[in-house]
Length: 539
Image (cartoon, rainbow, N blue to C red; front, side, top):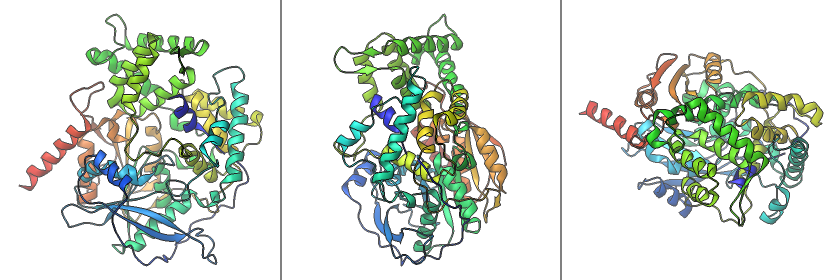
């Protein structure tokens, strides 16, 4: 856990390129030849419970869309899951966020979920975006040994009285390593990925429109796609919205964590409401008292970390990293309470065993001796997209204060990544420089939880207000993106939008069907209920 949380937060900095307003790209591709997929994707498919056919292909696209005289190209690795009923409305493309998530493996594990949400009416399609997978992977180190030597340093600006300075220098070092070793960094920006999506549309030869789901960072990409190609938007769902203006132009990006504290407070409220499923529950303590007890314990761990009398050290930063991960998915909060309960008692070995159950190594995962590019992909893409740079820690201190004030629970572990991004030394050859106030050919569906720890509802409201004709659908729950605490109502609205072109009324509010700390209602159960309701209508 310690190494995961540290890696996830880190990276690179510097001069920014000229902002380029989008011009349409005339596709140079000649079609897509589909074939079998490799064993790793088949493993992800099986792990997700899907036994149907998946197809893979490569699509050659320009390395640099802004340089019409260049013949340099790259191959996009594509994954397609054909519509199971044989009749498809077209291809629905995906970006699951990060930035830096490898989209093909994510989709391969979520086929059954998305067949329900799309009514099995689309071919589901994803490619690994630039900077991820085999598509210009953002590798800033020559090997895993070099990476291991470079990474260890403070990543929590509040961990000690010297942590801010250490984190600043460490983030700058990472930025420098990426500048030296990642020669293709200028070509992994969001604008280029947006053009890749449209190249796929052109190569498919369907209706010429983009049908797209973007979650988390995928909403910034979605907003960019809508602004760059408004006349080519078919169906678009942006879910768990981050503010695209802040993403491109703000040194702090503090808003995106502004509902994290409310989400963490809901953890304790849910614990009190379902004490039989929460290891931290006490008959004599309110939710506020449980939360106060957590922080009291956490600050003791800050002074004296926990150990297992062998090799493991659990400190303030690693616990915050664990909580940050837990905030994503309320469905795992019962297990979160068990792990915290063991840590409260000092039973580190037992807590680690429970943690391993919660976050098992995925099928098809990379071997441990391979360079981990997850952190460098995330921050590298963000870094080349950023239009502002900061040269000194003194200059950056107001941004740190802004981040710390945005969230008590994860603000201090979020500042480090922003330090790296604002010190990045490379910029994308094209950065979208316009606004996001556009009218798309077809209306966009914006979705959000009432409380999302990494994508506040206010950002979704703001984007919906900018995209003329769009509609905001609010899932009255917690977690990151709407499936984290699922609702039959929400899923049906998404399905009706994709299948029947029915847009819900703006600001529609759907109640969730999975209570916090539930042990008998799952996402699979909610999806099954949706399928049952539509099947009865079709009879």
